[in-house]
Image (tube, rainbow, N blue to C red; front, top):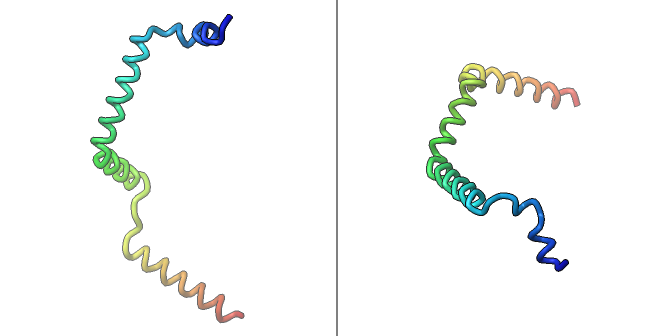
Length: 79
């Protein structure tokens, strides 16, 4: 058998060409829709992240900075 006959005898050719073409077109359309709505999808993802893990308030951030400054001063002062 020749190489091409062996190659085309594989189970890949069991799929009809039209089915393969249809899947390729669907994937292309899906990719186009995702690229078109990418900013919207990113915004939705960010909103979901904020729902799951909300941002700390300004008071909480100030308290963390103050605590970190005290720890840094304590570490520097002990050397």
